[in-house]
Image (cartoon, rainbow, N blue to C red; front, side, top):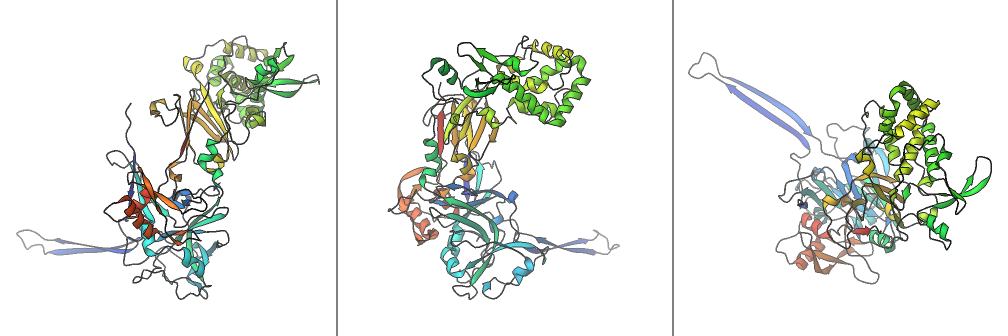
Length: 633
């Protein structure tokens, strides 16, 4: 099967069709008759004025921001990463400029502050910004159409002696903003262009870093190209408008994406406890059972076996016409060899009933609907209990939408408490990955318990028994659902985790074709660190990678006591041998000299042209790490 090539193009800048400002359009039309002077010549004219409103002071709304890196609130190894923000509006960085003599200069910059430096954001009104005075400096400005005194802005006040050490100069700013666009092999755009703003400072290991996207409109001198500090003293404050901000924590290398996943616990590969020397017990433990305390109805206490729907293998059990389930106890199984009960399916049935009764409005709807459909209930129940597991918001036949959706959710074990899925914490320890099959019989019992709401008379039970004799469709009887549970800092550290499951077992970097890719049926965070994922089919290969928008730009991994370097990468993405030493404006603060770095990259790659922001972005990409797991057995 052939696949099309997808490329990412980097573009130096993307100018808006019109700059911000007021425009006047004059239209004139002359009307006269040919070959006659009976109608005098007339001239009609019209003047229209309109205003182009580029973004200026207001904080950016979430729908404008595509992604930030490092992710907000994350804890990870980011000491070699340059923070960046990706904006959905590709023209935004060039809708204004830092000085009126050059419209190609971006007016936005990313400033990274260490914990001891970070300014406190203030929310003020536009009239307060205009009235800035004293030892806090902000240039005078005039209101534009649509702006008024009560507009709200966010500002930060930064001491001059800090700002002058970390603020990019004009030439660096030009290199730190670019546009990227996804295209096919014929360079046809497949997405809207995205604008990226890069920072110029590396985070400090062991500290919380805060990043601000600040507006620098008309704040650079048009002749010297230097930032205008308005005569501020070293300890005076420079006021900046902050359009967006986020924080993250930089920790040691053991917490980076690759290291965490490569050291993940895979023993055992499925959800089961270590085997014991006792052979009867070993048979149960190997199948994912755990012993649980069990209070019998007569008040006696015992220990019984239980396994979750996340099974170690494919279940062969099926509901038949002999499964006359009136109460959960009928699904309990007794093993005379161990003298213990297996309560797994009884618990599933009872749970389905309790969850549905807990949803009071739904329980009432099921009861009323079953009463109204008593004559043909045995046909309708078959539709309900075996609804396709692909979600739908439409009514399934004459089944009310709320009921149909409820049973579809149960098919994917939604609303099932975590302790029913993982009944013992030892099944899923921290930093572990476990594969599983969905036990379809357990799900059948769960759904049957849910549908038992409204069974009032013996006739109700008889109709349900008739349902059991109706054969399943081939589609439903053959369906297989598998998945995995991941308990790791990777889940909380990289919320945009990319997941790909395949039916083909492969190793290393072998290619897996899209024809073998499985559909994800469910993907949920069960806690900050626990991720649950279901696939339609048997997953044999699992690829985990960082979301493309989270791929970082930065330098080589930093080793203590050695020079900081940057590996060479061709503009087509190919990694080359060799590297350059990273130049700094202030090495103690981690502020990189971006202009000098582009010169060194040009020399290292031996290219004849000067680097623009597009070439810099292409060469600074660190790549998207991908870790592959192969399910065993």
